[in-house]
Length: 96
Image 1 (tube, rainbow, N blue to C red):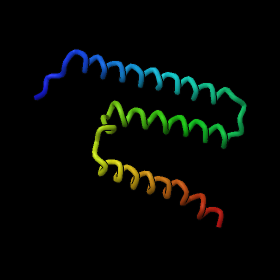
Image 2: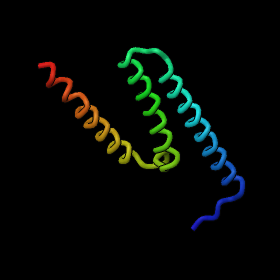
Image 3: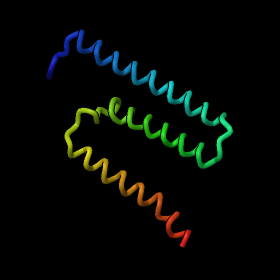
């Protein structure tokens, strides 16, 4: 068991607070997007982009994936690939 110094703990708390502020700002951006009179597909695209960034922040910092090995990132990339395939499969098959 390692004992962290007070300075290390303050550094980690500072990072968590910065991530929290970023998540709060991105939530405000998402709400702002909903009030803009954009076409539906653009509003969904922008909202999903912001949600992806927010999810990445949560996964990296609060789930501590930022310090994991490359194997975790490969597994994540494979999951993201198959997720994209599953999202696009109905679009491709319905246009045939």
